[in-house]
Image 1: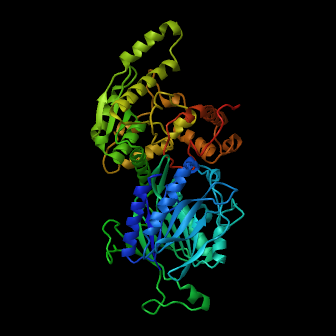
Image 2: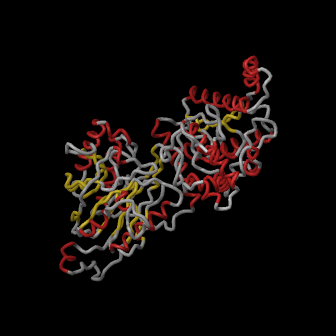
Image 3: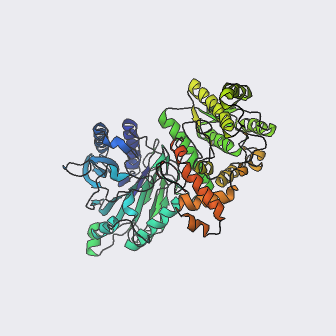
Length: 582
């Protein structure tokens, strides 16, 4: 069987362009001799559609788009993810479904059986769970269809499976010779390796090949990395698609026909001996012709984790802008590492000509920080200007003097400076139709070391899921070939520069310690006693956890971030704001 894996970047609700893109992949796969073309989970409408699923019009447009795709399968076979209406009077209104389209029509429909309800997933909100496996004969091979979470419950891999049902086990019992998994599996650091290990275990345990096709592209806070792959019945990697790029990957699997398997015979290859599975190669979708298949390449092991992290953030920024109707971004440049990294990522995502930086020095800004901001803008080739905020700051203080009286200056005056900067950045964004990017990192957001309506002003927070130490790692990674980020931004002690001589460590624990505590508390979800048991200072642990709890109200008002870790703030971590804290 020649299998084609169509790794798509889909804009949610963009049915016309999605149908056209699917049609292009079908044409290319057909010309390359593919027997079966696989598309990702909910490829027709995009993932996650969230409460659009409550719109009857949206669901009907999804089904109409599926009908258009089915008509394009004349002379070939495809499996594509879509939203199916629930025809019964009970249960949730729709199914997360996959349609088997054969020779111009929908031949069969599978309903996803395991619906995740953890982290960023909330599929039980709208979807009804399916109840039966689907095995169909395609090109003489019995293929079993599954969707994403259906394959994430293998009892041989997980110490504590979440569900009582194992859909893959049922597919194999029903006679599946090849398991197909249509996924919309978001990127997180090291997740590609986890997926591979898990699918390899599934293939080994059931002695069947598995094809995993994943979505690619950014949708809101989620970035899908693609990284689709095929393993043989022993779990060995046969082929792997690139990460963070659209691709049509062809794979030859020497599977016996179902009839031969039933009789105990093995279908011979053209050479008379059993042939190993092999990657045929990538087909360029827009120029594919019969016989025009590129040489096979197996990009495994995957690129280094920092390279993947960089690609995820760049694609996340690019797609957020492109799919939201923005072309330009504006960033407040402080001369520090966070704004420098954000600007570098933005320049990679949308091009330097579409990035504008504004340095806004205050009376407490160092000459070195202003020089670093200038050097960064020059290195990146982005637009740049300087607007000193001292006159505005003085005017605000004079206006507030009758109210503040003889009280000492404190955090109120510090935050006024941040809010003046937020005002100026947003003024530029409004005047020139740009999207303001905030520059806060995960460590600061965790403990509330940020100012509402100040440095938190913006429409996207690209590095909001990067702990401070990872910010440094990624910045050094970007500088490995060319010094784009000034060395002094990397080496000087972090400072908000909102009062004389201020350093971050005046208010926070050292970042290596802070990040380790936050990893245990936020990501691993350990309690204070467990964290203290790891030999962290008890007083520091208690203080950090208290800051995290009390800063929930700030995070609720933060710009959406790009999720790159296994537990990000935002939709995947929902806690009450009004509660008794430590």
